[in-house]
Image (cartoon, rainbow, N blue to C red; front, side):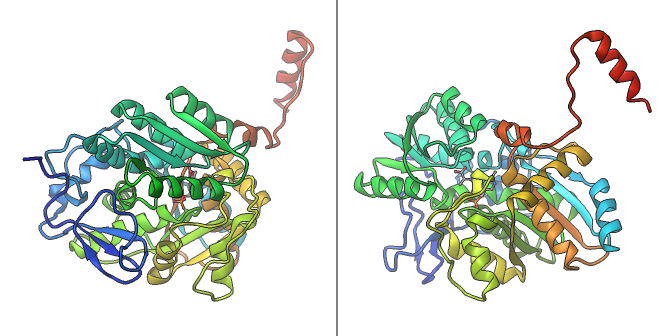
Length: 415
Ligand code: F0G
């Protein structure tokens, strides 16, 4: 008999019609209505003391995989939660109020983004299923992470990328880890469409690592567990939104802790989008309950340059149920936030990662937060991913024609 892949009691549920299904690792849409699926994990008997070890697999008792299954892991998760007192002071001076600000630095994951939390779970599933080929569309970070984890698992990986729109570090990582790469003339949304169609046409032979695969989001929900275990449940969690998978995963994580009786409250979820790629933020501002898809999304934050977010129903639900909101920020605001994190707190974020701070600052100026509120900003990816964006930032930078001139310059800087 084959050993079970999933824990007892794990189910799939349609987020649109509520239908329940047995856990099938290759079911990605509700057979009844076509809706997105989410994983239901039993929370009875889960206690803080049931968590052992470090990182994503510390929370194994709330992950859907059976205990006997050996993970494909790079020791992902367990990322630093960093109090940002310099930014707190800046906000206090600008607005007269000082919420407590923490950054959850997901750039500290093995491949430099939060994606690793999800890839450890799906690559474990794909290895157990012995799938022939794994595919993912990506703006870059999913690609880097999927390439690394499939390399480790001994799986074949093909990445579909929007040509010319992937940041240099991410493209380099994808090549380094040996994935096959298809670059399409088009946007991320075109790449995603191609992957979805190929998965469908292959009848399960191609296994997708994108976030419409609900099993991947199970790994990402551990962001919530780590935050709650370290500082309790914050008042707000601010998350950069592209496809909307991560914000919904984090919201799911807090709900599971609440259902298990491990925490007594839930945070408000704030989704941040770049102004040129803001289908959810635009809809939210107009009071609509469906996104306003963007045909030609454009932003310096290439990671979230997405016009048709596949997980929009889940992302919308996370924001509405939690009593939070969406907010959109300009590219200049993103670059200012990136510079603030880098130059005031020593935290290196890529543009999409810094957009959580940009969204926070915008709302703080509007008086959205109260004195004493605790706010966690998810900084989703590392600055090294995107060297070009770092080089756009201005700094005091001079050239010396000789070492003697450099000495004179150094000494002059004392004044
Ligand atoms: N931040 C970064 C750095 C990302 O790479 C992404 C998504 C997001 C935020 C948004 O997360 O899609 O779950 O809402 N990057 C995907 C990729 C699209 O292909 O790497 P989401």
